[in-house]
Structure formats: structure tokens, C-alpha cells
Length: 437
Image 1 (cartoon, one colour):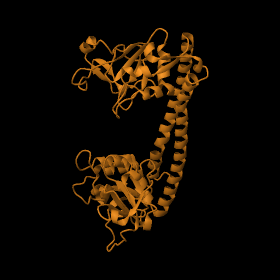
Image 2 (cartoon, one colour):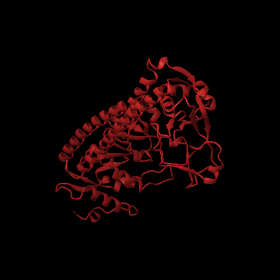
Image 3 (cartoon, helix red, strand yellow):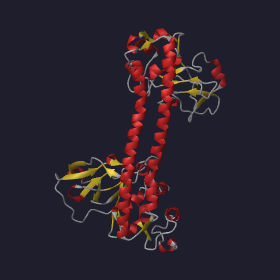
Image 4 (tube, helix red, strand yellow):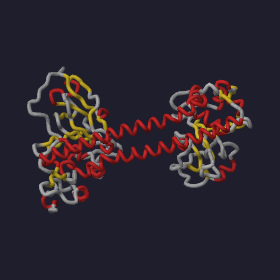
């Protein structure tokens, strides 16, 4: 490979190209013989001005592209706005048909909000000022640029050149001007772009199919629970108010000042630790001091407890402390209720009912307050459980546990398939820009 540093010295002496050169070589260990390295600034204009003498009627319908209309997954514009020219003539970014729009601000840049401007009224458009505009010359296709800049390695490197305050950081124009990309002849570009588009369509079909399977798998949980608690058999069971069936309903507490600085001690379970599947997330555990735990009169977790989120956005989320719960000693914080039933109500049956669509509807009906409202201990007065005999409760709990284990296994399998499918686009692009397609 030729010494690209000598061939392509930086236009801006303050702009280091070491990372760009290193990553270019990673993407392309050996370019095909008819390919060459070029700077983006050599093959396209970055942020070109409007044509001299540009004029348009104030009320002319004009395509406007806010950042929100860019689909980061597909790299396409969805539902652009049509506005009078007078509304966007000043203070917005001008671009033309087939220009490449690159979101320069974090986190849109990293998320992939980059697109080719297509189907513009009168072949011109306007968009947010957070776009860099790349206008290709006759040597390069818009699609070649677009696919290249959507690569994670390119986006990762762009973050190293961010300028501006935290939260408002942007990729400078110089980064794009000096970035080195591989450039084959136009016929080769067309062939590779066509192949990329064909493969991406196949990936998208596979992704949609897998997502549909995942939705179906997740729906099985609700279906199984409805078969139990909304069945003709369940309608014959005695309905009891939850308040009449509980020995314990209590929440926990934490030391004054919070627990963020406490790195060890007794695990403190909060709303963020209950997952959507009736289990737990332990990757961001909080702790309370052992001395505080020993003085607690309420909120100490036991095996078999049913835990319910009592306030906030996830009010009503339910989890069950089963035999796989990893902590021998743990507590709940002030955002969780701990429930234990009387001798005629098994804990697993209680959990499955509160987790069911029927149980969730009743809990949500007891929600009070605004978005950060929730339920109080009196919510149990508004929840009614269809209660079969104990042997039936145990049988149902056992059957549901077996069915849900199957659903969980199926869900994990499909999610792994989806993860593999989502990795395919970058693998395709990696091969494309190595000349391997």
C-alpha cells in the first residue's frame, strides 16, 4: 500500500490523520489495484453555499427535513415536512437532490442519522442546521459516501474530533474534509452499491420477520395467563379482595442522603431492579449499610416475596423472589411494596395473578397522581382475585412456571437471532469497502 501520509498531507495542520489512516487500513488491508485513497473533501463539496442568484417564490411548497424525520436504522427520510419557502428561507441548511446529509451533533451522529436527500420538491430542500451537507462530484456516488459514513468505525472516530460543550458537541467540517476513504472507479461503485442495497433489503426482511416472531413469543405470556385467570373455570372461583388475603404489605427505606456513594453492604432493591419478565436486573445494584438493615423493621426480602413497584413510570411492575434469587439477605427501598399472602393463598399464584393482564388492569385502576404518581397501600382494596382451592393454585402455578420457562427460552433464542441479523449490515459494509463484494 502506498504511503498515504505523503500523498495526502492534511489541509489543516492541526487536524491529525493518524486515526483515520489506521482505521482506513483496518477497513482495507489491501485495496484492489484500480482503487485509490482520497479525502472526502477532494471528491465532494462540504457545506456548499446556495447557488448565486438563488430565488424562490415565498409561498412555493418546499421540502423541509427536521432531524426527527431521519430514520437512523434505515438511513432514510420518513415523512418530510412540506412548508412555504418563506418559512425556511433563513436560518436553515440548504441542500439539493442526492446530497448526503450528515448529522453532526451528538447523539444523532452516533445513532446514525445520516441520509441521502431524495424526492425533494424542485430538487432542493432545507433542514436543521445540525446537518453537514456533502455534495459528491462526478467521481463518486452519493450512495458510496452514505454507506461509508454509516460504518461504526467512521462514527466512532468522528467522536474523537468533537468540539463544543458537553451535550452540544459537534463534528467539525474539517474532519469530513480530511477523512480518507477508498475510491474505486464509478462502474465498480455502481456494482458494489447495487449489491449492498440488495443485501440490505434481505437483512431488513429477515429483521422484520424476526421482530414479528419476537412479538409473537412475548404475546404468549399474556395468552397463557388469560387462559387461566379469564377462563370459564376461573369465573366459577370465589373472588376475594386482595386486602383480605394478605398478611404483609409493606415498603422499605434507605438512609437519608441516598445510597449512590455506598459501594457495598446489603443489596437494596428498587424499581429499576425489577425486569419486565417477573425477574430481576442486578447489573446496577444499590446497597445500604448492614447496620441500617439490622435496624429496619420493614422491607426485608424473603424467598417467595411478591414485589410490586408502587410509584413512577413503572408502577405495577411485579417480580417474584424465587429460589434463584442470588442474595441471601436483601431489602427493598421506599418505591417497592413487599406482599405475602395468608395460608390459603400461595405466593406463586399471587404473583402470576398480579403479573397477568387482569391483575395489571386492576392495579393501574388504583393509580393516583400525575406521571410520577403511583399506588398506596390501599390499592389492595381495589384488586379482586379469583381464588381456587390450594391444590388448584399449586397446579396452576406449576403449569405456568413450565410454560413461562418455554417462552423465556424461545424469547432468548429469537433475541440472539435478531442480534445476529442486526450485526449483518456492518459486516456487509466492511466487506464492501474492502472490495470483497
